[in-house]
Length: 544
Image 1 (cartoon, rainbow, N blue to C red):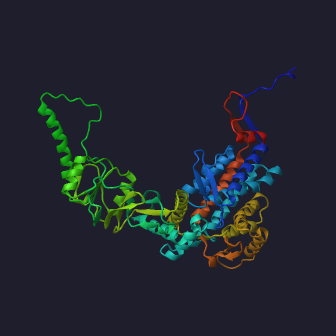
Image 2 (image 1 turned 180 degrees about the horizontal axis):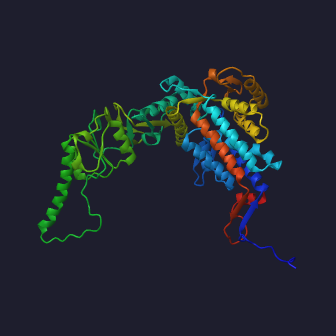
Image 3 (image 1 turned 30 degrees about the horizontal axis):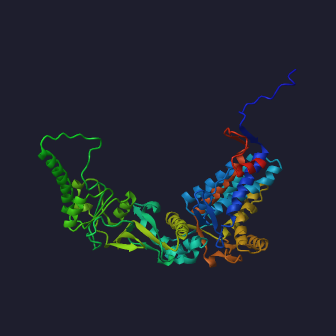
């Protein structure tokens, strides 16, 4: 009776629904595709990627996060892979490439089990268990303590991070810059450690010169010149006042109407304005500063008064620059000139000077006694080189910061992955649990691949080393990313911060779990005039 009835449409006509096994396999494919893009960017022999954005700008980099930021992808699973590189970058600053490669491999490891009709939740349970074991081992027997005071050892760790990047050629310089900057901005208040790189270690890029000329200033540099050409441009031991109010006559907030009866009233009004500016300047001159920085404007009249008192004024500073100068020379930022007192004046700086670099003027406030903020001055041949150097340096800074906050290390060069993989294999749990152990081997394998070594031979030898390892301590044999041979990381001195590794594993496994959980994708597409796909990518999607 009901045989000839049409099927009921629940979803609207222009939504596409895919479900079941097909979706899971597609997600795995998407994850693998993203990992393949990034795979050659791992290790010291990493290749660079050149990306063009829609505006025609060029980015050249091997930083996993920077690459994925520029790529536009269609597939929702691929989008979440890109998201994890960003999370990794924000959390620990380094390891963005390895997290993508690992996550892609974790997904690939699950594929055979899905094809054997094993339910995703079973796989997920095994993955979770494996992750817990890895984290426990990492925190106990796979990592070693680091003495933060030992600068040579800390430098080795940062050097291992920098070695895989474009600035690897100038690694000693980069390591010195990173450590100096982090040392400067580290603040220890009543046992609370604070290392705020983002706010207080500013990277200033000036095209021109050579990379070797880059340095960390013991103070701050700003891209500004003095407001009046006759003001002093070189002051030793300056007294600095920081303001965030304007040194000009205040106008009414909204429209103001003034009625004037006699002509002398108008003259009086102008006089009041001048007196107001004069009073502000008198307040400033009273504390006898040499330098005034303000975030707002300075009127011509105020410049005149300050010039007469021999004070140099610099206007329209950024709020962040003002905060950095405050930290560097010990001044307090004052909102109203009436409230200026002697203790608000910063006397910590040893030198104020203005230099012309290229065709711009830069203000230097340097030789500070105990600066808690600094500027990293980068020089380089072109903008692209500078941008890449800055990205690499950010990674180095984050690694140095992680070491200060959590001074534990694990062996680099794929050694720790191999050791963790061995520990999981030894438990002899069948199924997806062992698959995680194999997935971890992707890091040493990729390292060997990228420097053109015989992957199978290197990995077999490495596996044998780890399997036969007895005795105390960590088995620190890994792949030397330069030559592809297996070396002892204790000898080679390649170490990585524990915080980075932990975050990498957690993020990679959690993402794999998340993507395996998905069994249905409902995509609503907008109505279009015709039924043609919008772009080639969409057409390709349609054909798959």
